[in-house]
Image 1 (cartoon, rainbow, N blue to C red):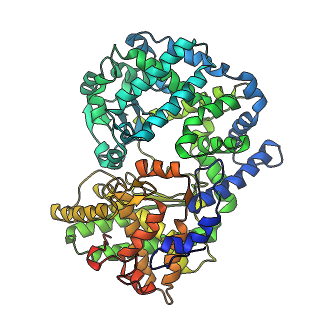
Image 2: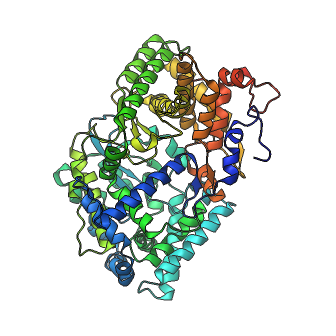
Length: 634
């Protein structure tokens, strides 16, 4: 690197600068480095294997993979897709167009919902926050076109430009339909008009980040009054029959209470045209190659991506989502070593035990609260690598040879939606995995009080049995600590050891925690970054988790015979190495609950004395903050 900064001034660029200068972002991706590089390696590996599956050169004893392979073949069959063109979706579009009255919509709403068509509100089944053993039906407003409500604010030029891109894309797609030119213009105008009405009533990304506030139980009779003239009772009755829920969990109360301000007899034409366009844009992904390319225009502009993936990559990415668990199990069984699994599981338990000690020494919690926190830590379930058994549901996902790609996807999505809705009367299965084995990520689920580490993330720089313990602690160790810390972030702290929404804290304890949370918000809020600014409130939960992950692993470092803090901090910086398109960076700033990767690397280390001691960081150095401003929550 031509002007390599001192590590005391910029850890991130000191460690990653040379790579950043040389790294090239693939044309079909918005980013490279860190997580993305590992994801590309897994993708390349499995793409090659799916090609061999399709050519009959490779086989597997995982039965559920056979339909994944059949779907893969449909997607790469460009000749058939292009011959079919727009035809497969036309019956569905005609059905939407024929909705002339609210009564027409009410008669068709249940079936439209099962067929993945957007209603004037969204619904589904998930774990009940108040009772994690059962499921509940949830309700929220419809999706909006732009990434966040802030894009619709007056003076937001990026939002206006993106809406123009969307409008041009929609018009280009509509030219393949039987609509006249005059109808096309009306459909596009009405789509934007309905979207604008909705955007004034739904939650922002900052509001969604505070997900505890999603739990708003309402009696179905009350909801029914709010969402008239849509007959929600009829919709649910047709779907659930005698099991129709009497209580609905409203995730976005404002959208439901102000429903009549964006949906009514008068706005029905706007909704129908919006629904038609939304269905066409969504469906274009599984039509001809040129329609798919057209339908991805908005997404490419939004993320700064130059081109779509080649058809083989498109096919892998689709089957990787639809048949996620079988593919993850296939990957895990073939490429995830038992030695690594045993080593990382041991590290998880070491981190949990250290966490318990840190809680015992905590200065702002009373003893009764500490005991409950330790109980929660003791009951965290660890899911490492991939599940032992594939969810039986995947055997129900069938792909018929005679179906077009679009028809196959419609049937698969309908099966998934129906499966989700059928969960309403079933107890929650704690053995379900939140992420498949081939995903480069990790997560904590507050409703299950479990942590999941897919096999694909357990590679360098995060983890290797050939890396030093210090490097692994700065990589996967800090990630493990991060996920455990989500059990005690501003959202997770409201859930007990069983995954139930229950405030088990003393009031004085939570007040002290809230003050520390506000300190974390202030530490990041307003930091200039690539022409924008960090929203400290949006990213606070992830920052609390980063802080906790670093704190607990640094404590473990002190217990090593030969701790190498330089290796620890350097590998921490490597993990967050990322190069991204400017458009994608702006998108993340507006909508992602994670801080920019560069700031994750540079900000958290400043909160720990070991950073200053290891690199002799002085007051005159840029990576210095006064001791009284350093934050350590967990």
